[in-house]
Image (cartoon, rainbow, N blue to C red; front, side, top):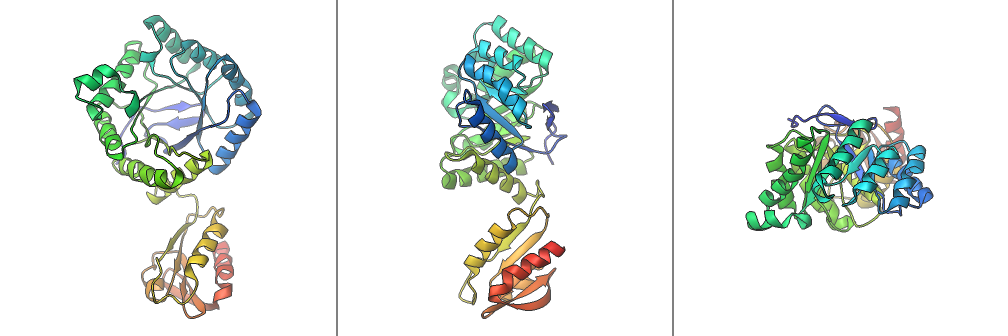
Length: 348
């Protein structure tokens, strides 16, 4: 059961428990370079990104947002640290969301001015605490960086906005440690009903980062916690979207493509199953049918174990069986297996 939250929108994309879970990424271009930033955002959108965040380092970057916004289709969030004037300028330039911690931008009047502008333009504010940015007083009070110091550090920012009667708030509370992240989100999820942006911060390179993110994000989503996600990888931002979508697919939270299941191979396998599975994955990547395809090494793991698959292959000696819903259709030579499989999928 998904946790119930407040609901609102970044532009035309809904955030909260009434809406599907969204996938975010952040550009790694120089925001002042409008062309490069726009091109990367368009690539991210093609990959399935729902919301994109960009760094706003100075006035030039803030002014570039207007031109970027005109050329893209997905909502854009301005990521700002400390400088309330950059927040105001970004809001003027039609951003859909703001990432800023109100406790870090100075006086009450500065925060009030930012909140007033967000109310006028209907701009949600995402606040967040990472394990490396927990306020010192909370670290000392709660005996280190832990779920308590992280949560109450974040709640300080929440309370500032609530006192200004502002409630279009998204909260992130990430650590690079998976267990700490999970514990922190579980705690804050019981305290507030704001949407939560979840992920493992600084997760690492695509290999390690994918594993850490899958465990952390997947665990929280199975708990019903999380309304928008980001897979933070040291690599191409497109990989963040690919991994994020696969996490949602694996949890039956996104049904937009072919799901491939394949056995791990063993001494019974008499065809080149590893190569076949890789080629099948590549060939079926862009087919937008919510079906399950099994690539199995032998009759033992074929129609029997994979009978829940919509369609599949079971290898033999230099040949294989094509089956649907556990029933054998026909026998095909090994070199024709993938071709015949794709033909059957297209006819489904």
